[in-house]
Image 1 (cartoon, rainbow, N blue to C red):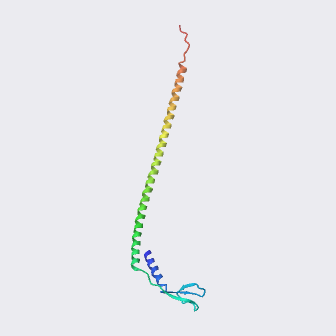
Image 2: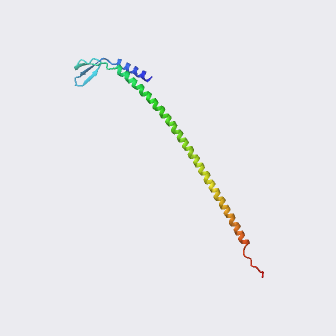
Image 3: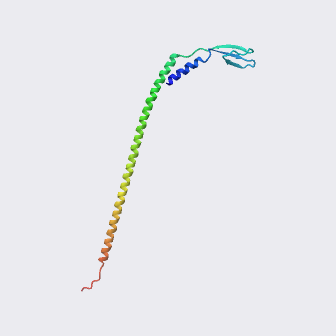
Length: 145
């Protein structure tokens, strides 16, 4: 589609220009270019011949190069999209692993906290028992002879 538009543009541009351009110098010494005849009081009128310099073979080679480049661009875009999807998947997996590890760490900390608390409770129970035992086993004066 782009190529067709370019071809139409090039063909339409060449037909709108005249084959000759006139160059003249006015009374003030200023140089003018145009396709219409100059005024009567001008000096040094020259007619410049413009040749059609459109090279059909170079144009066709340029179209071939352009189509090759467009195909290469499509391959690169496809590869980049694939790489992008792979990178997103890797990031998603990485964040899932981080969340899982964070959950594991929280569970381990909670388990340690519970075990420490249970140990404290056991220690306090032992202390209470030993205090009670020491109170009960206090040396009583004995009056036995």
